[in-house]
Length: 146
Image (cartoon, rainbow, N blue to C red):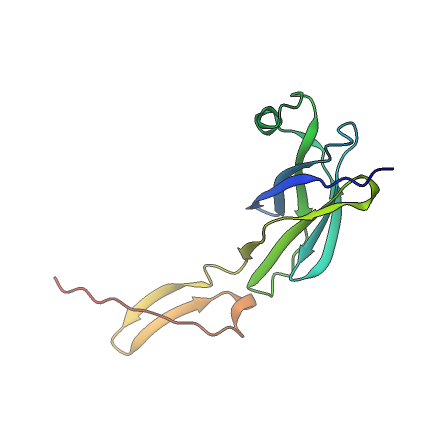
């Protein structure tokens, strides 16, 4: 079997109310009939695997592919929410073991960390999220006179 280098791109990291996913597209030019295998890396470690499973006709047309070729992906991630930032990239695996490493995206998971509850003559009262208690913060206060 001929070794093939896949084509692909990691477009975004999306966050829903209870889930985080990586979104993008990939295909193997030598095997358009099969889903492309994806390896998702978080902070340099293999986190999960997946396959292309969505139609992306707007991308397919750019490569002169049929609009019904399955090249899109949305892979859910179960990320450690005690870590503030994650570096995420995807390895696209093609026929015969050829591969392509995507661009790297960052995802901040703990922002905002809290909210200002009140300002009193003795200071500020700030409520921090429990996941962020061991995090250092820079707090900037802007005083505007009327």
